[in-house]
Length: 210
Image 1 (spheres, rainbow, N blue to C red):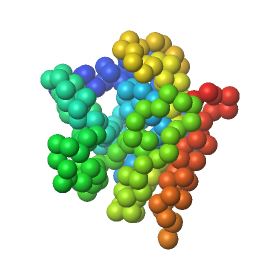
Image 2 (image 1 turned 45 degrees about the vertical axis):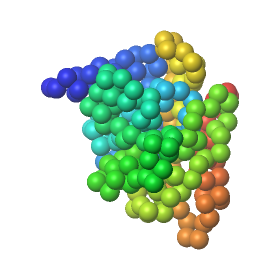
Image 3 (image 1 turned 45 degrees about the horizontal axis):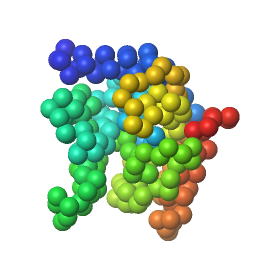
Image 4 (image 1 turned 60 degrees about the vertical axis):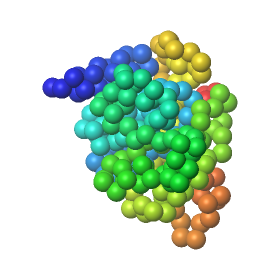
């Protein structure tokens, strides 16, 4: 096994050890089909938790979205995101290349058959309710109607790694996967994004504060 494979297996083990990383497939089973998983966003650990909750055989083809300015900011973080997680880098600021479509790296990954993990809020929220979704998910649904859009709710992860903290605290976390969505014929952007956000919120466990 390569160093990247060993590291990935170790990180998945640690994530499950610290958080439990329990995946609940309530709306669809885990399947080897192309998907876009979209979820609420509260911590740097969010995509690690989803990745760890996936069956091992799906991880290699499921790529998280990573902010280039943070995750490529050091040699170790760059190696971790490229070699272990096979992340798709996106630029949060368009000042470096204002002509580039910010969705271009995501489109390229989908065109080559990969699945994605995205957070349509665009930034982490300290609130229990997700912020309004940005338009990227809508445009991807338009361009790739055959890709399954699977909502997910990540619960308790903000208690493991609160914003501004660097040391994780052991807390049981869950990822609940819901029924796939599809962009309806003639559905406008606002209605679709509200429906997608509602599908994520509906997966929140009863009594959860977010």
